[in-house]
Amino acid sequence: MLDFDLAILYGVENKRLKEQVRRNIERFPADFMLELSKVEWKQLVAICDQIPENLKHSYASPYAFTEQGVAMLSGILRSQQAIEVNISIMRAFVQMRQFLIQNRDILKSIEELKQNIIQLEQSGEDTLAAINDLSEDTRKEIDDIYIALSEMADKKKESVKPNRIGFVKD
View 1: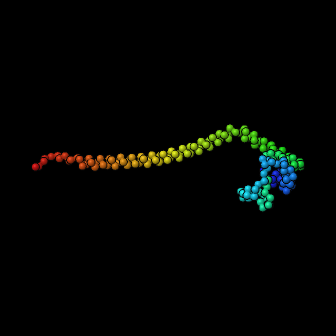
View 2 (view 1 turned 90 degrees about the vertical axis):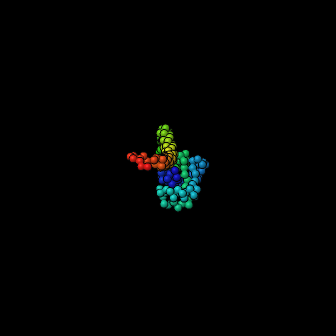
View 3 (view 1 turned 180 degrees about the horizontal axis):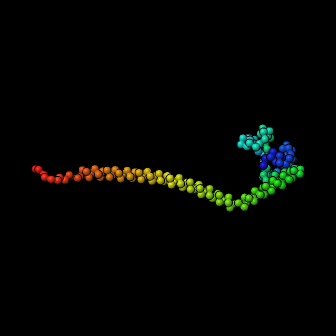
């Protein structure tokens, strides 16, 4: 979660939240929090409509907090609202984790179905290519048969002598 979203949830100014984080920076190792680079921040602003206008042009890049970083914020923000919100956020993270654990088999089945569909699409393309090749081969064979039959018919016409019926004059 980004610092300005957490500041709204905790009911504090973003400036104060960042101030408390900087004062307690040892509580936020790299796997708890990171500061977005200028490039990352610009990319985020470009793709996200939910960023408040006054923050889009801020000279300071925001902090992004992991689940553990959000939990650590409750230790440095001592307001009652911050504590209540942090409890709610932690419960939401726990529910998300439980959902993923409970539905692991379903998610695995969905992934297997995706792989099967990809394989079927690939084999379908291979089959279509084989049919097209077969069709081309079949057309060539039919053409060869037609040509052979035509040649045989022409030879038969040449080799057949007409039978005369009736009297023959010398």
